[in-house]
Image (cartoon, rainbow, N blue to C red; front, side):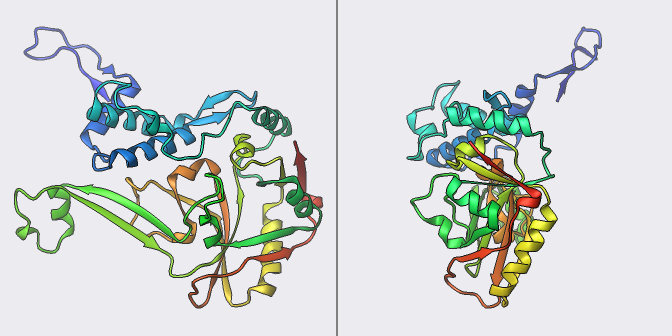
Length: 326
């Protein structure tokens, strides 16, 4: 966003356009499209927390770092808070960052430091490997014999999971604030929309008609995932195609009537969805974006309310994987 100095009628000579500081430009852009204006304060608090969890990270030296891709969204929520309450820190209370009963992950912990040093020493590139994080007692059998568990999607909604795992995998919601102009664009009878029609909040839920099986790994090389998943080990899978093939072949014997799908999770910002076509088994709430998940899903041929977990042994991963224990 640029601002010109001088020009006709100002009495000041024309000069080169001045570049606004990026954070100011982001605030002005948000002012023109205040897409979070309809959220309750509790909902805005949750959005602030979710964005902060993606903004924060751990660098290769084990130090707290910031993810620049999330700086714009962070600026937008700061602007929304300022528009509601005044200049920072007005409006920020303990509930703003602690609306969730679960504390923030400790990215400055000894575990984070050890994880950062260990992963940075391996020299991996994103997209070249899959990584499975977990407890050593599960990661060793995975590495040795390919022992793994395919969980029902409903499993992840259980309240005993931590925040990095707990999610409703059968439903994804989006929420929009619609002005009169927005309403006119989508209704079949725009002429009947009153000129003084008030703004409307639209909440839409996308739901899976069936429970399904899911197995997740990550493309992310971020050491913070050890902390998020409370893991003390991981398996780095270097031949992604071979692992996918082994998992497909083994699961086909047990899930003959289910269709298998594989691909990266699609992270959806509920206030800024880019499409109205959402395939729930691969759609994830944007707050989990830092997990950079790769999903394997099996959908029953006939919708069912609940499936049960499935234990598989797909074969040893030793030839093309590494077991890392902290």
